Length: 302
Image (cartoon, rainbow, N blue to C red):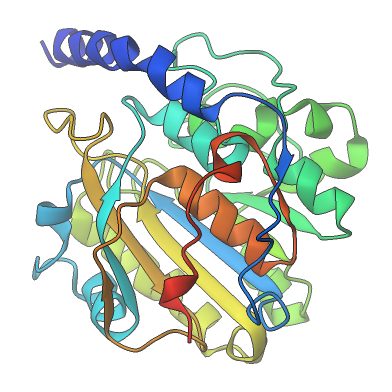
């Protein structure tokens, strides 16, 4: 029954795909506005953590989610943040390519050659890693090995990664995150993918919140983050009954030593805005797909 409901809602979302792709398609575009003034010189380490399938109203103010709510209340909260599509895979691609690419999680594309965040980071001399919890091994590009979900790790599909052993080696199990943080080897950009038990997909919101408190709190207290860090914790989409702006109303929390304190934004944002924000804060001024025309999110920083 749940599968039939999911298939039905996926079909509904697909009706919106052509319109969204019109907005998000194309190659990287240089924007004369460039990075936010004064910000990219301060930020040198960006970490994006993606959780799953819950609405804004389910998360914010929920006593079962104390850690994330504390971050939202202390730092920055986007109160009008929306997923781009249903189901998950298109949102992960929007976060990293500025395009939905596909809504087919059963048969995703074997190879994606569209402009993407890896290409732009490398072109600007920046380092990156995808830290995926329960990934079977370093450089694993294969299908699901539960509780690891391949379609939540868009980097494995990029031609820029598949064609380079050096870039493939940046697909690593999440256990490497703590080691890299401790040794001072954290890359400029980290994409953190909790497994299906800890991203609120199969487990509870409380389980996801406990995971955040155990694994992200050490990042925030580290000297490297306190010097030049930016953390974005977001949900890829709302629940499947929420079709507002296609992907539903969900949560994005922005944390940095340069954050405005207890700041709430009412600006409309989606994943292409996050993509632009991440790249611009790392000093990159070429933005893939829909990120080229997206409003930046620098309002969260002082």
